[in-house]
Amino acid sequence: MKTILCYGDSNTWGFNPHDGSRYDHKTRWPRALERLLNAGAPPEDPRFWVVEEGLNGRTSCREDPVEGDRNGLRQVTAVLESHKPLDMVAVMLGTNDLKPRYSPMPYDIAYGVQRVVRAIFDSRAGPQEKSPWVLMVCPPPTADSPGFKHLFGDSVGLSKKLAPLYRQLAKEIGAAFLDAGTVVTSSAQDGIHFEPEEHLKLARAVADIITAL
Image (cartoon, rainbow, N blue to C red; front, side, top):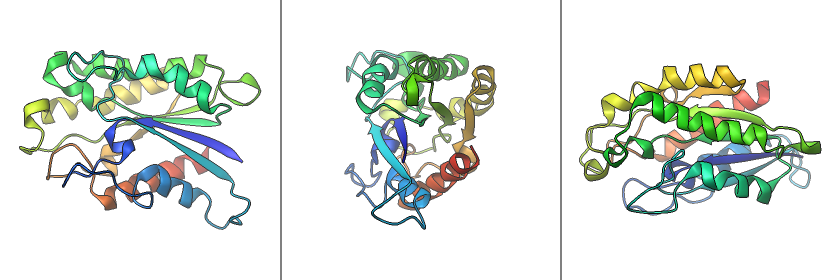
């Protein structure tokens, strides 16, 4: 059985943009991914195990002076050690790096995510202490909404500049790449999080890449 780790922020955790609750297990994209990958396999002998590691507010490599303890680079080694051996890790980070408190630049955000991916490659957390495959997912652009404007400001334009940089930096280190903005859109409800149907769309896109790999 292959083990896949989904490492991300509130959209991997399953944040509901309408009330701030957590989507149920059937809705969240990592759980939907597991169902898709195991379609046709006997229930008692699934082919894939998907581990959810989403944290609200998680950044790529930045220390949050307000919420604290959200540094994805600092946390990733412990997470990998907890769940190894891992065949693949899907990383979707960068949305929280858009917050004005970090004075973000597009390249800095993309490079921060690349640092996380490098750490995963260097971890030897795969089978037989080899490196796991890594899928570097660029989050979709944020949407213009008053929902989280107090935290993200006018981040829409900045968020639209990320995908080409993610693609370039993923190729540079040999990671697979997915531009989630070609698959899903952020909810107009809060401008950041996904509606239920978007979780399923993202799961399908990631499943296609995993199957190909």
